[in-house]
Length: 494
Ligand SMILES: NC(=O)C1=CN([C@@H]2O[C@H](COP(=O)(O)OP(=O)(O)OC[C@H]3O[C@@H](n4cnc5c(N)ncnc54)[C@H](OP(=O)(O)O)[C@@H]3O)[C@@H](O)[C@H]2O)C=CC1
Ligand SMILES: O=C(O)CCC(=O)C(=O)O
Image 1 (cartoon, rainbow, N blue to C red):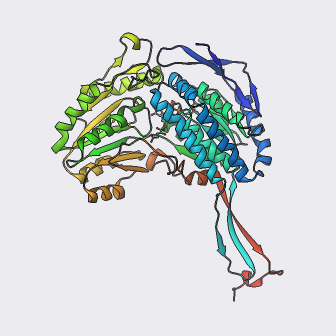
Image 2 (tube, rainbow, N blue to C red):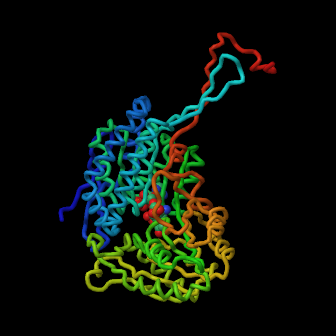
Image 3 (cartoon, protein in one colour):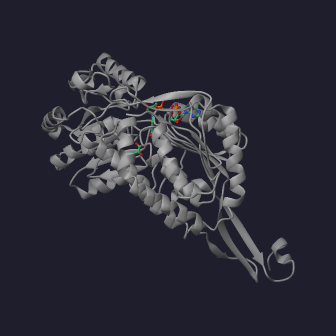
């Protein structure tokens, strides 16, 4: 296939680069694209473009801003298959999941566009006669969006679409592993006719272009999704430089299966949650907390179904699990298997790099089940980001919830039970941003808040109306039509 040439998109222009880097297909190591290795000078130009555009974009009525985003949604639908094929090749997720990634972008476009006609504030009575009081949502300014590779279309859409509807201008710095997906996405925003400078794309390395954006004094907000380590750097830097910041980091999500659960349903959830996207979702199921009464039976069912999963090229519709994103991540998953063995976990199935036959040039890891895992082990506490699930046995519902909560993260969670009382207790007692009852830990919908507690994030939520809280500031407005300074406001109001 022809190698794509990705450019930066700044002030409505596609700009080629002095120095370029390659993006490779994780399935076979073929070069997919070259993209700019942007430096701080490129970042300066992108920020200047976003700043200039901000002054006029914020004045465009919100319903009109939203119409551009609606158009992006329509174009995403038209280009859905083309984009999905590109995601599958560049990121490595199975083609059906890649279509889902684009569909999340479409859903987000139509949902965000609707907000352009709401962006509700409040009106409230004043203490004074002949005085009107209200609140308004105001844009924040220039927003840097730093995104990971695992949802190369959905996550940039979750950030850019509400940000733009709210009247901000944006600069996207996508992950270095998925520059072609980001380029195609921005081409669609450009085709929708957004004015120059409203959306900008700066490719490059996190340590260079990403860092320059986070540190820049002319950026007002950073919205970041990625690792806890980078998130800590972003949070600290934004704190020091007085920027707004929204952090969306990792997870160590658990699915509980109680003794009264529908085991077939719980099995579907576990397979999809643990091994979908090769476990490379922040919402992936990486712990299965199983009641002792069903543990043996469920483990046999899980092992059998896992043994049938097919590793292979993600563009092949018969493939269940595609590759890991790159060599470094593959080695990281392998490292966690070494740790699991040292900690005396039992590898029930999988546990190795898969490099036979057509897999030999890619970064594949066998779907893996670890048994005899105790809550204190590193594999039960740290995010692995691969197709690895740890089984933990419990003897009561209370113990299950305590173990589920015994983690530094708090993104997604799931409980399979037929007992309504337990279901409601789980909703109340689980420490996570998202709880599913009788559903897997993955599968978020764009009109509900997405994010987590503890070290998963810094309290903000993407998606839903809560995204508006990330991308706007409140202004309180008082209109006095009494024609005089109302002294009582200063004195005792009597
Ligand atoms: N919560 C989630 O959805 C995700 C979590 N992760 C977790 O992170 C681990 C590592 O993945 P990785 O891709 O390295 O995640 P990173 O946190 O390194 O990358 C996320 C984004 O941040 C950028 N970045 C990296 N360093 C900096 C920096 N100093 N300043 C500003 N931006 C920066 C990256 O650019 P670049 O790609 O160029 O490095 C990328 O765009 C995974 O194993 C997983 O545990 C990963 C992806 C998604
Ligand atoms: O499937 C989901 O719940 C969304 C997952 C996601 O956005 C992520 O893993 O980054």
